Length: 334
Ligand code: SF4
Image (cartoon, rainbow, N blue to C red):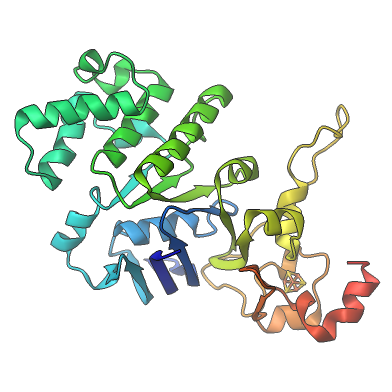
């Protein structure tokens, strides 16, 4: 497959009165055409900051992209000026946010908000724009689009507002769709419908999808590959089956064991990962998960582990995979 996105050594910081937060610390990953890559991790791990860096939406200051490159369709997005980036955002890269009410304009009708995008990125006539708005609203499953396009966001249900946001993000048929926790604010049945919609858009438009989520159920249902992020770094990545069935990183083990299963008895507590992520004002030099890891060794706190290639695109950064840690693995029966 051909690469659509190639991110190398991305570093994003935020300067605050309390010091500099190292939100993304040297992330490298890529995304193929038509592929769905999920990024999972706890709140504050750098998932959304990475997405915003790709979209050119990091507010500078206080934000700063201090290193790396983001090659999109052969162009380094970090080298583009504001005007050129605006041409790409909304046309070639679309983004769906978690809470449509925050991102939709409450004072404009649904139709006008979609029209704004078409005006910016196409030379359509008024008639062509109206036709396209009706077509995309139909496509995202909004019945009676002629009436809906004249309505305001507050007149729509949560699920319908999310569909409108998807319509705005996809009306120009983007090559990349970034979905940041697209179903968190919705109830379960609507969640499933929205995920199905994203899947069908991905197929019909041959769009690549970068899905940011903390829900591993969503990952299993949607993604081809998954990237587990902790404290601004990728700790494990690979095709979904490898990461789910042959996980190698203790943080991934923790995430997977906290998924509810049918075996869970009444009132039985779901396992959780004890402790909290490290302070990113001064991230640890060694493995950032060491303070919460039951298998941490002396070296874990001193030196960051190298990323090990486990084959078939499966990678993991953990000292347990070092050949000299064989006895440790045996002692824990790993
Ligand atoms: Fe645990 Fe060490 Fe692996 Fe980090 S490197 S996850 S502390 S065993």
